[in-house]
Length: 450
Image (cartoon, rainbow, N blue to C red; front, top):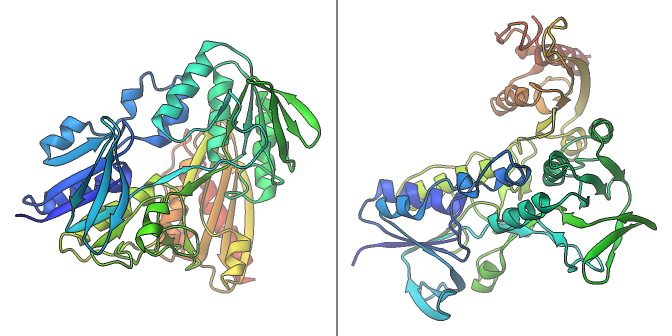
């Protein structure tokens, strides 16, 4: 009998690992268990399905069950792994279609359970009309709500998902209020003053923003009618809770698979867990931050796909190390773009890096071009060496993807001083003759070397 790989969780990390492993070892039997009706889908596209930018749900499916079957991967929907016996090397699987349970043996196991939406213990959180956005079912529900009528939506949480949902409902013509408990929007991504720029832009667009206040309760008899926000009653027909997500580790912990300090599954740089024959990748497990060296649990599709690829190589005899993450991320709110990478000033200091910030404002294109819009770039460098350790961007259309220049520079250990003469592309619709990235880094070099 041949070797068998079992995958627990059939989304980005799990199915990337399955595909890589099967390509590298054609004789390998691969079985993927997925408790939902969907696998290998683009969760990051869900807000744009809610808004109507994406016309149908199937557009978010990366690969169909038929495509996996042709590749020799046995994908089983509505099958939930409920226990792992690491001594016997079997998983207990519940078939939700017929209610039966069975055992499946494995030679290698991939733990890729992902994450679920975090739901805080707010009184009234279970009322009808309160939603989260994590799965395709969630997206379908929210789209139905958003298209059925127009009303008032309150979004609890001012991070990436909160703002993307705000854009979706605002596009649909809803009255939108975003509530963020910390002092600025995108508090885990931007410094507070840059987050304030985002809030100001949102309010200019007609999206109401409350920061620095907590939701005390969600009111209503059966269906939600309002949100109690520090004594202020904000009318609501719909509430979307977008306060983040948490890794799904219960199954791993029960099986004795080590969970690390972040609350996610601990892995080494080859995606191996502390149990022989078991790998993990994706939102459910940890990674190392490339700048600070800290162990982090970041729920980003880029990490899940890359780490899944690493696991697929290594479980079939490869020797590939996951090199870490910068936490590079980007989003938009209509025509406002926001991005960040690396370490912010406070994070750099906490990691023992003597950091200095440099902030420069300019234009996304030549000043005389009609599409030119404001952009603010903040660069964090190491004092003395001018090594680039982080960057944040807030600006109009064409701003956000400049973050890739900074991510590349940080990845390769470049200094601000060495970046000044990099040959960046120039044409009036895209940049000034000196791109704002180069201007920011020239000034950052001066600040770091002063």
